[in-house]
Length: 194
Image (tube, rainbow, N blue to C red; front, side, top):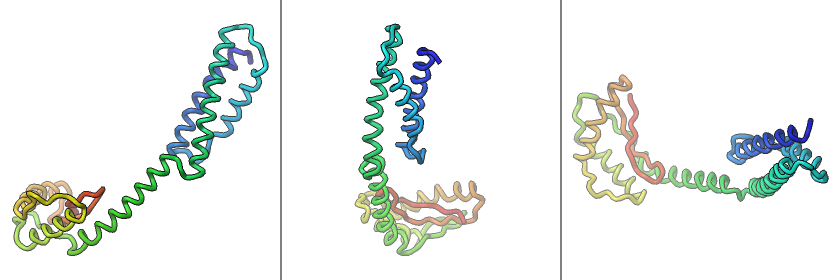
């Protein structure tokens, strides 16, 4: 291979290496692309002491070498952070798991206290079922630190009356169970066709 072909190959490999490292850092690839990284470094070393007479080739080679050296330092730093567990992606996942853990502990007392409430299609949602669901929703919102202003049993009944036939028709169900859950720090109703 000649110098122009080597430079073109080097450019392609650096582009491919960037893509592979982005996948690795995003957690899509399990292994670091070390073999390709070593091939690129080897190709750069081959021309490190060589004086190129074509200034265009010399400029392109020096540009690719500088680009690779900068990327190489970045990849090394991020790989160390991943090993130490201080990489931003790992911190985000840790916070997410912690938040899910606290949401789960918040959800159970409020949502599971009285269990789900079942409503049949064609039957007006009212009475003790609405009161029960209303108490669960208010308790969950208070636990989540959400305001309960404007939340009244008749507003909840109207919401269920509107959603019930749509859900029943969509899933071919005769009844729908509603329960209160806390997800992402917010209390809401979750419907299950029965």
